Length: 72
Image (cartoon, rainbow, N blue to C red; front, side):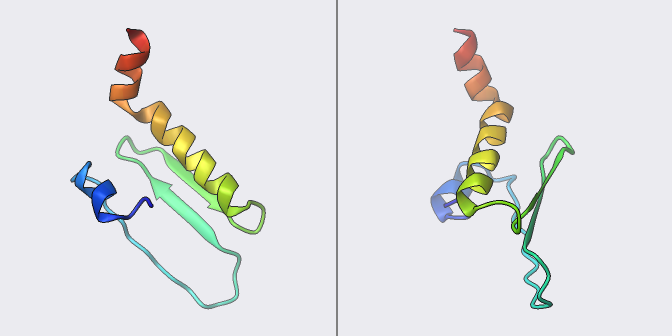
């Protein structure tokens, strides 16, 4: 979804760096946004749906086009 070619083509500045570990630690997703804000989600405490919903809500809140549309 997020890393698809179509999604990446909408934002050339978006960079995906993955670090897959097999050390039996709990899954963690660490996202750093262009404005420096970080979002760290610990998979042991959240479902994948909860993580995706949180990411989507934060991305929508940061989207300047969505903010502009809300003003109209």
